[in-house]
Every structure is written in C-alpha cells, then in structure tokens.
Length: 360
Ligand SMILES: *Cc1c(COP(=O)(O)O)cnc(C)c1O
Image 1 (cartoon, rainbow, N blue to C red):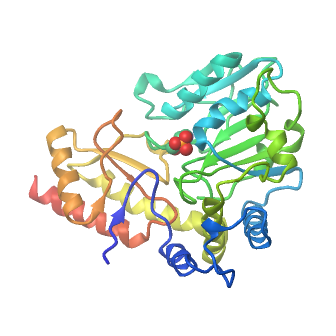
Image 2 (tube, helix red, strand yellow):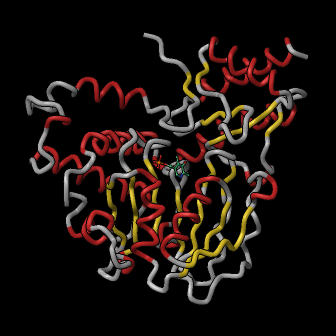
C-alpha cells in the first residue's frame, strides 16, 4: 500500500489514523455485529455517535448554548438557497463577492429577494479581500454574507467585515476547524465537510437560535427549513449517517492534536514553508495579495502554461497528487488542510526546488 500526498481541494486528505480506525470498525462496530453503514439511525449505538460528534464539535469551537448544530445534506451549495429561504424576512441581503462560491451564493439569493453585491474583488480575479471596514450595508438587510476562505483563489478574511450590527452569515467550507473562531460574531457558520473534516455528503450548520423560525419564504420545502432539523436534532429524516460518524472521528483526532489553537499553529507552520519558498523562488509565484493569503489553499503559477502542465505531470509521477489549479484560474494549487502532514509540504517544496533548478 502506498499513500500519495494528496493536495486536492476537496474531497480531500483525511487523517490516516481516522481511516484506519474506520477500517477496523467496518465489519463490526464495537460489538454490534454490523457496520455503521448498516445501522438504524434511531439505534442506541448511532444515537451515541451523533451526540458525541455534536458534543466534541461544541467543545472544539466553544459553541455557546444558544446556537444549534445541524448535520444536513445537500452540500454547501444547498445552503446557498436555504439561507435566503430561511433568513430573508425583509427579502434583502448584502453579499461580499470574493470568489466563485460567494458569487454562486449571491446569484442564488437573487432568486428569492433583493441581494446586493456590496463589495467584490472580481476586478483582479479575486486575488484579494476588499476593505470591509465601512461598506454600504443596507438598512433593511436581513444578513451580510461572506465566503470566509476562498478555496479556488486562496484568499481568506483575516478580519471579519463590519456588518454594522447585521447578522453575519459565513461559508467556512474550506477553513472549518483550521483555527479558533469566535462563534458569537456570527449568526450562521456553515460548511461542507469534504474539505477539512470528513467525506462528502455532510454539511454542518451552526446557527443562532433566534434565527430559526417558522417565518420562512412561502413555498420553502419542509426539508429546507432549519426549524424542522433543529426540532428533530438532525434526525428528521435519515441523516448522512456514515459521514457524520467519520466527522466525529475527525473531531476526536483534532482534540488529540490539542484543539484549534494547536491546529492553527500547525497550519501556520505548514503554510509558511510553502509561502516562504514561493516568495524567494525565481520560477514560481503566489497569485494572492500577501496579507490575504489562505492557510489552506495555496495557488501558484510559473507564468508559462506549458511549464505549469509539465510541473503538474512530473509532480504526479513523484507522488504529489491533485496540484492542478482550478479550471477558472489555471496554474497550480496546493490545498494543505488540517490532515496534510508537514512532511507533505516539505517534500513538495523540495520537489519544486529541484524542478526550478532543472527548468531554469
Ligand atoms: C467546495 C465549496 C463549496 C461547494 O460545496 P458542495 O458541497 O460541493 O456544494 C462551497 N463553498 C466553498 C467555500 C467551497 O470550498
């Protein structure tokens, strides 16, 4: 068995320990004689799994009691609709568009009400985060929306926007659990788990209780109401049971690493190895404004498309997978989520250095 260094943006690398534990429990989960995949979501064993997952996430993120944690399906993209359907009481929301995902969320919100694009970095291919200290927030905005870490472009909000008292909604798909967060600053924090937490098929929504009401847009399907899932502890219908089980294992793994402070230190150290190399390289260049750089997704280019393609091909042959940049940006992107070991980044930089010498 040979595992590669997987730099995929998502679905992405998971901790090897977690995969091994899951493998050991595959045929007989702790004496139940069955796999978690085969188990009723109403069983005692599963109840413990989902409750522990929630408790561990609450502990890791220090989630206050007046926030609900929901384990849902439909990916992050379904939240693009669920958020306006549930939160647009005045039918007005402000969107900060810092990449493809924020843009898609904005476009979806336009279906349901008046979505205002109050800031954007599209003028420079989303390579920076706009100044959000004094934006024209709408008087009657139901919320202000951001995508906190831009997976495709490799930018991250280092300070949250000044929402002038309005509820902040944040897509954290690609920076979930990568560092500590102050949950009280948000109305909703949500993310698909396949970037930094678990297998595709689960989206986690952390939502302040006062935002969960029956007062949703007319025609909102039952399955898309936060209230139905909150009232039923994420068990209104069959949840993505196996995925939640893996997320639970990843939460425990993060706790063993020392929690989110430790995760942040680890991620900063890892990212610095790659960024420091890029900053002195004569061949490779980072594509993002320095102060807005993501710790999770690192896009870079040589400036020559053929050379980029050659690099991706040779890197793959050397055991570094999924380094091709997103089709909308080109070049390369290394996603270095929580579970990417530091050796993975060190070896990648070693490989890049060698490639640079050979192609000078
Ligand atoms: C991947 C991603 C999405 C889309 O996730 P799906 O689960 O495929 O819908 C949305 N937002 C961000 C920031 C992402 O990285």
